[in-house]
Image (cartoon, rainbow, N blue to C red):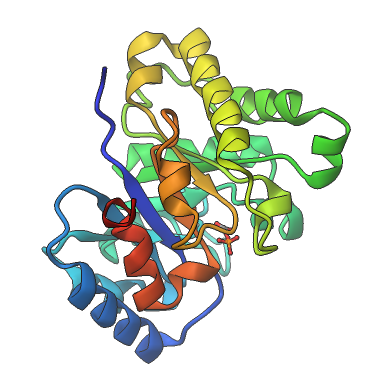
Length: 255
Ligand code: PGA
């Protein structure tokens, strides 16, 4: 059995000013500084990336961005490139979050370009996929995911994707308090891993971390993590409070 190191990632979305973000990072670090068995990532808003990176530099916490633009540079007012993220201290970047697909017209194609840019510059992309409630009810979950993964990962080889992280985030579970059951998550994660195997071979499928996201809380993380194909979590609301998020990171003490 291949050991996949768990990754617990916090997506702060459009919350926290610079001083608030710095304070949250400091408070979190106090609580999780001794963590050795789990990778930790926090994704503050762009404006706080550099300052938060300074707070956690050299610690067990890494910093990620919530989005990027695929071009290297140019006249693209308001956009941020992957090399800018690297220079602000980022190690990770979230790509194709459902809120970006829903409100900012992101497509599988733009996800693909963003993945290319992030990998080229040494960022670890967390590619988000997930079905809406309507799609789940219509039993389209697997076909929707199939399309998102196939198109998102078009033109890549297994070698290109060694660091890729996938996050399964059912849209109906994000910010709603409705978590997928551990069994529902496992069923989809297994499907995603099988897709990776078919397209990129056994090694990549076995080593790729697949996170679950959608109303993850301290009281459901241990059960989700007990599933064989759930390798971590992408946490929104519950990552904003350092005490709550530290409990999720320390899920192993809670079983
Ligand atoms: P939530 O968000 O934990 O608040 O449901 C998850 C996410 O959007 O990544």
